[in-house]
Image 1: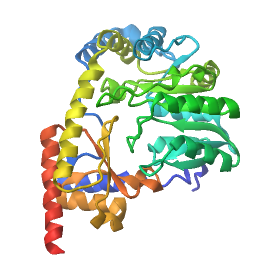
Image 2: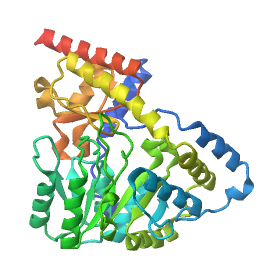
Image 3: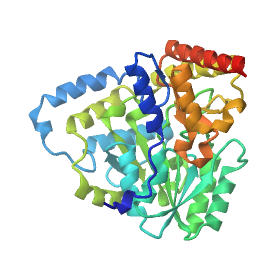
Image 4: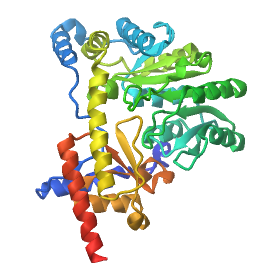
Length: 396
């Protein structure tokens, strides 16, 4: 049988490492999983308490609204006013999505159609690459990496050489997996470029609140005029450590919001209403929880980066944002490629990481560590990596 829409989506390469990890665990091995970016930090107590309370009210068991209940849209626009100084209309410039992935995928359905072009950084979070693909658009990948001097210039050049000309540009900073970060000036240039060339901007702000060392990520919507050409996705997944709750938002341009709302009205009835109610209370009454989450990730980042430095894993930059560390494969293993090297780490070091090629071909010289284990477990993983490296050195 032929399934044309998904026929050109490659196998999920992360499954190779995940399958091996499960095989090792079935054999009784303790594998430290730093691969899947699945936050382990508990959700706020107030969220859990309000969820239980709201779930006991049978009125909340009925269909909800595909655009999100009004108080939830008001809560996110209030958060943007507090955190970013951005004024948003909860009626026209905000919609609730069932997580950011759902929001982005369906947004692409209304922004692009077969024959349109979309520009996406590479490497990138897989849905950024494949949401336009699923909409039938032609994806132009722009390399993003440590040797790219000016990513905005690279975007401009990609636009000029692409055909058909791009209808939309997807960005996400701080960036998963590379942890690349930008300042507000980048978005100012990007908004000006989008207006000049009649291009839609989509910024996935998944790591809005996960930042370190005095850096603060800017919102696209902080730029005057950004709402004329773009939208931003925000989620409670990382900021409030609520991954399984699936609460996301698309914010900004009212025409793009209205188009997404029209599509979603045919596709879903929104997230379970008790989850929406709990999310309202969380944003309004636990606004400092992202700092708790951020501080935990900073400790883990430092433990991992310090440990990699001690075992002579060179070239690893300490990220200014995200819950990841993007590490170049050590020179002596680079010939293996990221999948085979990741398999080797599971087998010999009992540590699972994400192979960089899973984020695009430009990622094949890297692996991604996710900071989803506590510092003691990270330390255990580092000792396993050191033993594996020492054993290979002794054999060479």
